[in-house]
Amino acid sequence: MGIIRIERKVLEKNDAIAADNKKQFKEKKLLVLNLLSSPGSGKTTLIEKTITSCKLSKQIAVIEGDVQTDLDAERIEKLNIPVVQIVTNGACHLDAQLVRDAFQNLVGMNFSLLFIENVGNLVCPAGYNLGEDHKVTIISVTEGEDKPLKYPAVFRNSTALVINKIDLLPYLNVSLEKIKSNASKINPRLEIFEVSCVTGEGIEKWCNWLISLMR
Ligand code: MG
Ligand code: ZN
Image 1 (cartoon, rainbow, N blue to C red):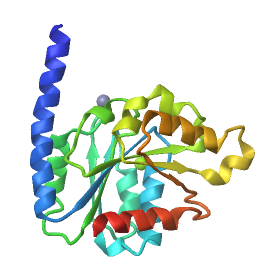
Image 2 (image 1 turned 135 degrees about the horizontal axis):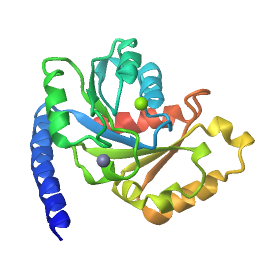
Image 3 (image 1 turned 90 degrees about the horizontal axis):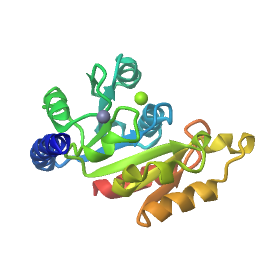
């Protein structure tokens, strides 16, 4: 029982800081999206594609979360986008305090859409609010059909699901319809996007959704 109580305390403290982050984000009129996925589903690639394709590039900033390395921040920096790397040194999720500290490095910069790329992990990031407006889950078709059933919390807590790498479908024994129906079973309100960051398929619809949220 001790463990349960401690965990609840950690989450309560996190929620208080997240609420404070949210207030800061609101004051600056930012749209903030917390991107969640397994490692390798294409979070960074989706951010890159959004920057290069969505006609929003002057309005985007990014906070990158990784267990090690600033490789992803380097990729974003190449596109001339304000970016801060959080290296968690082993921790498997971002928390609100880490985001609050990272955000101070972006103060004074001009942007209205902030992507927070969480650590690649479909488990505990679901429980840690960062002050974001929406969580967006990304899965790639190579991960199979059962991810929503195995990791329901991230899907339940997300506003949108991006199904990535659909260009690989011809080579896989995977049903896109099955992925979607499993996801909708867990969360019927999920906004679902089917995209390929390689061919650009589906990206325009994703861009339009982002733009609609920014109005
Ligand atoms: Mg990444
Ligand atoms: Zn964790």
